[in-house]
Image (tube, rainbow, N blue to C red; front, side, top):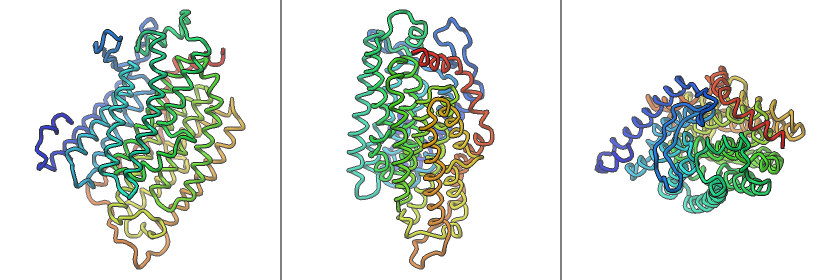
Length: 489
């Protein structure tokens, strides 16, 4: 669709918006089909064991690079989440009134790139498609961003994420130089079979450090997170929904699917460090969120803080912890998209997100206010939402191996998270309306659809988390093999 829209004259403004909506809707329908029909390959002798919908075509044979795609029990969930958020983001892009053609094309490139990255089974293809999704972020913040600091935000985001991507690329090239292939299932098979050509402990430690810190910068690992609140505060609504909700999950996905199974020695050296750093996300970013007077600032810092749960689940190196990490990735993607969509609508109406200047919005915007209240409660980890199911699973998994760190993380989630979320609900939704408060209208007509879809998915996976765990269970053998390798080391 991005290619089709390139040929459409820019005067046909409605074509760009509806083209993006229809394209992302088509991706969502296909993602639902893949989710419903997913049955992993159970042939133990096959390189593609555990994957489904596998397709392979030669791309750069001289370098062993191929168009190799497929999904397993982890990536099928992220593909579905990404497709839901992409459709919601396309629907919420109505606030773009200038250069609609370029914005729609960039949004579709983001969507296609990140969907492909989650499906890629070739490491180079995975990295390439992520970069295809990442580059539009810089452009969209600089051109369509809001606030006086949008150019600074675009530059800082570009520098940080380029550094993270470069560190990760160096680590991936070192893996390629050792195994002479980018075929991920083949490399994992050779490592698990212990064919004698594995990296040394020192090599694994270096490569894992490059991947952990490189991908950690892309995700917002403390203390390399400062680009994220600035970027999300300046980004247009659809861009913030896609990047915070979906693209940021790529670094976590690559840690689980590439770094852990290929580098067990490196994981043993560096995961304890990751466990302590994740407390910086939960404690420091949570405390910063408490000090925010701007709604986007609160949501942005909260989003970075919630990444600490995923890092904690990964660092636990238990099957329960890894399952919880994937569940939090899905839940956070939906919640971040919903929260930024709601703040985007408020900014479009009031032209400000200063919580001190707003209040009593539940009376004048009942639909918007109700959804914001539910989003804030979901951010607190309230039972009934998908976030609770993922976070409690992470705590169960991490408690086995890291009781002290898990206790601190649980306190941060229950106390700090509840304080800033409930304070935002009190300031924005309740109390009297000031006489000089800006005029705000509720979400009209069909524009309610993306909000309902995102909230519905959060509730569905919250009340029926088995929909997620059943898929992850199909990847149990490969994930438990990673855990056993880590324990043996």
